[in-house]
Length: 89
Length: 153
Image 1 (cartoon, rainbow over the protein chains, first blue to last red):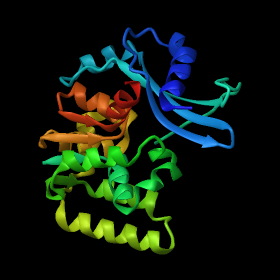
Image 2 (image 1 turned 90 degrees about the horizontal axis):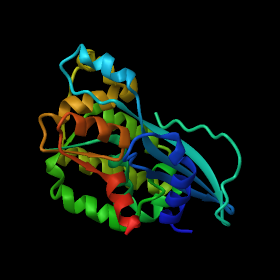
Image 3 (image 1 turned 120 degrees about the vertical axis):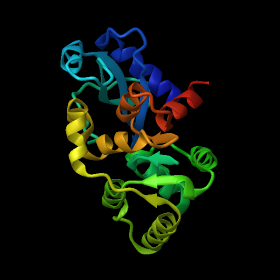
């Protein structure tokens, strides 16, 4: 399965989680373990509270958060149920 | 001068050792030799690189687990890079100037933001750091973005 397919499956699954017009979905990691792809994708979500936070400073206002999600996808293109934690920091 | 973050330096060093190792680590799992060659071409001369001590420390924490000949190759690659690149130290207290961003970015990437303001380019493999750097008007070569463009074609 190619990376493009993995990203498309993940985007289709996660796109409802963001209201940003161009959420910049990205494939960050992809590891094949036996017959299951473990992938990490990122995308932008809006955080309007940040505008209030940054308005008191003279620094650029960035009102988005980048969210990272981990998914497991079988070789049959099926997203496996589960809630997977990912922390790259 | 080109600032470079930890994850990008990982791609660079692993590529110098052996590009076939990319698939062996989650952080480099989507990259291949072509991506490494693009990175080398972009950098041109290793003397163009500015590397924070914070980045060197994080790199070593990630890659010092090699054993045998890979460990020797890793050490030699780091020595070569250290000799040719510029190491820049910025006091950690700079994070107080970036308090709102520090919460998301952490020490190294916040300091890297400051460093990048005085560089021609920031090379990063970190999508969140890339987002913030672009918001600051810093010119960014975003390795993740470039890779995703490639396999979307």
